Amino acid sequence: MKSYRKELWFEVPTRRAFVHITPQVQECLKESGITEGLCLVNAMHITASVFINDNEPGLHEDFEHWLEKLAPHEPVTQYQHNQTGEENGGAHLKRTIMGREVVVAVTEGKLDFGTWERIFYGEFDGGRKKRVMVKIIGE
Amino acid sequence: MKSYRKELWFEVPTRRAFVHITPQVQECLKESGITEGLCLVNAMHITASVFINDNEPGLHEDFEHWLEKLAPHEPVTQYQHNQTGEENGGAHLKRTIMGREVVVAVTEGKLDFGTWERIFYGEFDGGRKKRVMVKIIGE
Amino acid sequence: MKSYRKELWFEVPTRRAFVHITPQVQECLKESGITEGLCLVNAMHITASVFINDNEPGLHEDFEHWLEKLAPHEPVTQYQHNQTGEENGGAHLKRTIMGREVVVAVTEGKLDFGTWERIFYGEFDGGRKKRVMVKIIGE
Image (cartoon, rainbow over all chains, first blue to last red; front, side, top):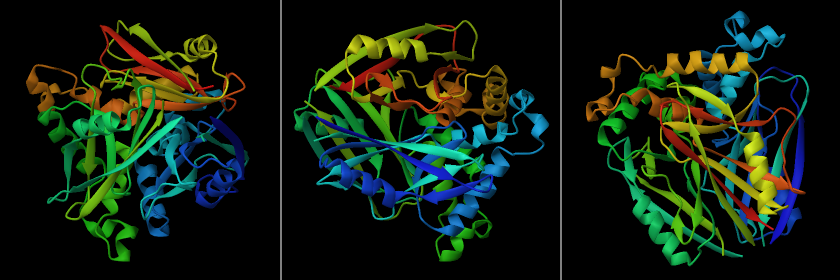
């Protein structure tokens, strides 16, 4: 069994953003030399997500609007967590809806995706350096 | 290490439905000959889900009602995504809540489940052929 | 390829609680002797979750409050599922938001975590013995 590990780093200037990372993950897979196996991609932070959906800007606006409705940033005083001095209570909840990780099949050296599947990094508490884990096992 | 891959195809006539797929996944596992490892089952579409929950019709009605409340289909004009000509903005959000994938332990040739765990395909934008990936690695 | 399996058992006296289980999972990893691979941790019940977030009590209160808003326990008559004699319709929905499972990279014999990542068992229908699966594959 082979295994491969890489950290991808991001510094998103805004509080929230979605970053398309399929090309970086494909690059990792190529580098790994693994052709059959599983590829785990996860946020290493608890106010960020990795998820699979459509690479369509309108949908990303819909996500932004919807998440803000389900888990609003403000008023920041509504979250106990923010009494620690943070302002990211809502970001923890948004990340929970969008998910921490994806596991993708690796087949014949490729991410084994449906037609429209793309991987995104979801930032909900940006303005600093954060990272994503790519771990691939197989052979 | 062995690896196995199969696509399961579905054509749900309604917009939304939950389909019990545990038997098909068990069949895949048997076919794979793998007795120890991990089994990934994921929707290959971004308006569909694979999830684990109870095989109880009342609960599925509850899911339907609840998802429609959290991520309504109508009015379709509320979603930017629908300006692309689609009507499935709400379906993308519903799938996000229900999840894209499950990873199941394989032990002694079986899906290593708790008593009530069953796998479902969740369709949120039906009326056409769509597919689920089953990828099993192990030995 | 090596594989390892262990069940962790919990009996939470209240209906709902979050239990920090990172130390138990680390103990499993040590016991497994696996140094490179993937570690799956999943609830074996459909009214419980395994998730990764911050080990901060204020945040856990926020989760409790937020989940109760998105998927209320009462009135219990609002859920079809509760006509089976259960009172846990809301618990199934809460578990859906928080997720069934996490997959964690194993690198150099350790759970390959970001600084604040910790694993929790989320109970939404307590008062009885329930269990979590830890399955590790690798070498």
